Amino acid sequence: MRWGKTSFAHYAERLLVPLILYLLVRIVTSQYRKPASETGAKVPDPVWPGLDSELFVINRRLSEVQLSRMPHESLANWQGGWRRLFPLRVV
Image 1 (cartoon, rainbow, N blue to C red):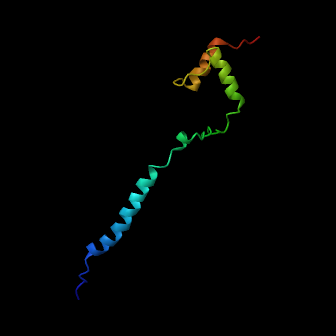
Image 2 (image 1 turned 180 degrees about the vertical axis):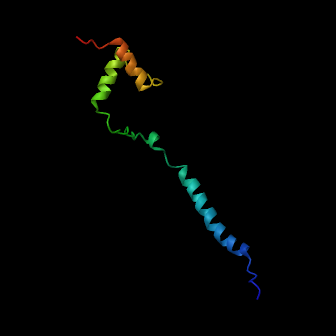
């Protein structure tokens, strides 16, 4: 038994024509659309959970007096600096 001698070129031709037409329509219509930034619509800033935390207020105050933790500084080193600046006095 032999397999059919149907040419796939016949099917490809029928599939490529609608695909090419669809892509052409998408290209032409995308040139007439303006991005949201050009239409004047302002994109709202994302609301991150925890932005209302009191820790941000404390960190902002510490950074004003140059006592905030640096990005490269580990938590242990930062706490050690606090201990050196403000030693515990046991009476």
